Image 1 (cartoon, rainbow, N blue to C red):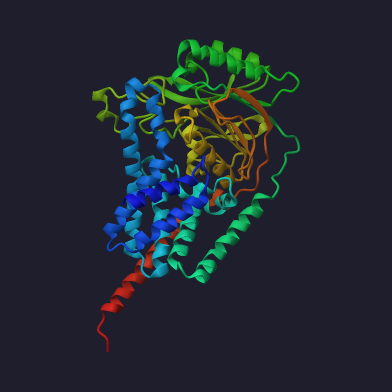
Image 2 (cartoon, rainbow, N blue to C red):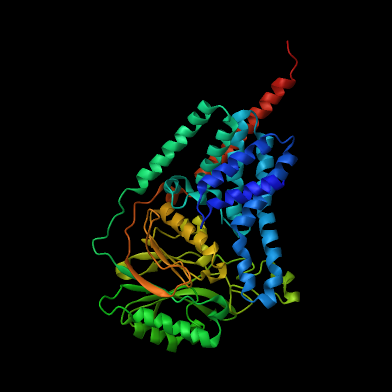
Length: 495
């Protein structure tokens, strides 16, 4: 178990900001013999749980950061959050190891079962209980050639290919020729990804320029009245800057206005004045009756709210309380809302009509980690627009991992992604997942960039996870049938 946990921590080095996918491959290859030699599925499950606990503890340690914003009030919960998060997600991997041990047989059959089972539980983790597909194994390829494969197979398919390469190579060891033959098709896929990454992205005939505004409002100061005024003025200054050339759209981050929309008319007038006739998209909280919403609004050139979107995929325990009646008695408050008791759910994905800039699919913070949410758009947008407040994620790994997932969404859809983040990393990302303009983490500033062009709809944009899901079920079912048939043949009397 300790050895498996250490290997899991090694595997986490593939995630941003370290970005060493070879460490993840090595960890998977090294843990595979422990799994393959386990006497029973239960023993394999414990190995998988230990491997997962080490992996998730190392990759998701940023989960403690929100508890340190108000350390006197919430700091005591931080270690429990990390233990329960890592241990809870490790249960998925423990189940995967047990399932693979149960259905797989033979040197290579068990390796295939290992990859299918891990990919299957990662898909389950992406959907169950609203889902949390953060730190998926396939994410380690962000910034590397295999990232381009998500346009065909999605992040779960990329996870399967990654685990399969490591498991098959480990199963073939120390037969060098077998290892080389096994890795040859994966090397070809790597080469294909590298070729794809070098293909040009269409350039619009009349590129529209977007401006990203990053105020760098520290979370513990963001809602303080004195500092909130400073951050608001900073955003006004960045919006009005650059008299020599004006953008076509200004974008402020999530909850950028220090009041609710219902009372924000004087502040919005100042935003419109600073923008000088340029539309502004920004994040703001609002009330509707007794319901509070985390929203994005678009101010037109005259400062009128021309469009509005309410976040609908909320953060459990951060923006709403599942089974809230269980927590009412202890007066539990939430991190993600300045209102303390959380937000209501918006109606669902929608498109924003931004005139010459085309249609954009708005995503508020957490929503950008879900490829299924992007695929749920009512029609194909021209680009993806994310506003976020990554101050909650700390300064070490969380913001970089969030950015990495935004890059994956761009490749999956063949669409540019534009993200404005309160403390960073704000970025314009092209349809190949390359960052063409950005602002560093924890720095205030603004940046202008032409909006990159879109590619044709990808295979994944058309199908989502269904093909991979069906193929995994067929694969696991086939392996189980073969194992059962072999067991029956072995138990039959010989004539």
